[in-house]
Image 1 (spheres, helix red, strand yellow):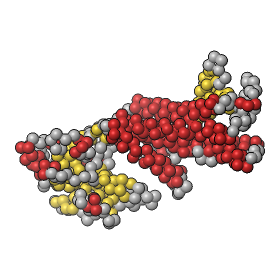
Image 2 (spheres, one colour):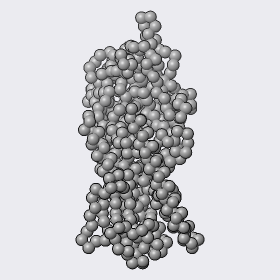
Image 3 (cartoon, one colour):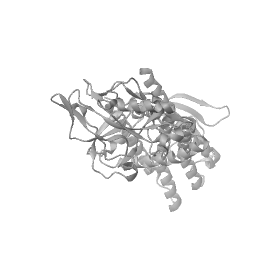
Image 4 (cartoon, one colour):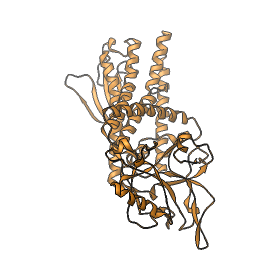
Length: 467
């Protein structure tokens, strides 16, 4: 719905505004602590929309038209004293304080962005439910043994029969969960439904297994709402790569084959098969033990079987060449972390976020790296998928990553960024000699031009990607 996209746009704008405000507040707070005179604290660039000052205060607080950053205008930072201000006392200049104090002022913004990122990730882990789709352990008692059930036109009733038998123990269809082992192939994670998949293709009046072998990967459009299994399947050619022992013990015999030249996984184009061709899956089921919570016993998706038709497990191709089946749905599985669990998850998520940021930065210098950059439009476009994959927890994780990324980006020694000013300050402190003001001004101007040019290029790239 259109209003959902409006909501995501507002979320992204508020998110970026908070991050920029906190970043500049770090500079302002440390400047005030060391008695540096600050003319203006601004969110955004360009024409001012709002400009106010506290009674008897010395610093104007303003909001400007272009919300792509912000700044704190300090005395001695370069350039003339802004119009309407009297020249402050010399000792209140940024250049008059000790170099170590100036360094603290310069790194205060990125420090608060880093702290904000850590806090946002923790809030997501501690305050919101975690949505699960996979389970990598093996059941340890008779009532929880994993049952491999073939779902096709011949054995479609086997699943229903198994559940009927278990009803004597008090189990129903809703007590069973699909077991989904997770494989790591290169830098990609694949939840595997079945690694021995063949298309059933029609020869004459009968269907026979095709020669090609595929890996069925669980690829749902959402984890936060009930969805059909058929709509959650992606097929990849089977790889001959060695399967890790922990996965082979779970019945995984092949891994997805990465065939894209850029190293990205390529899904099977089902259009190469005729209408009516289908696949059948060997699913591993685990019943939830009586008295156990979903989280402690099994982190996976609930299996619900509607009806008793023999083709409960047949996945045919409809006229649009997409998998269809209305018999099996996967319901939402979620659980809140307790206090200790929230910290444990945060201790894993925070390093993961930092690692992803570093890897993303490195990838920029590889072929096609520019495609990995995203601006405000790309971030907004990604929000629906992020929310569907993990709800509010993943949104907070994503926001935390952006805040940490801002800290990392601003520390780069590139003209116009905090890292550049920090580098100049360190050089001046070590050499005991000031860098020429004209050089700093020219380099900063060049840096700003290049940065805004990059932002514009990213915006154009993100708009093109939408169509």
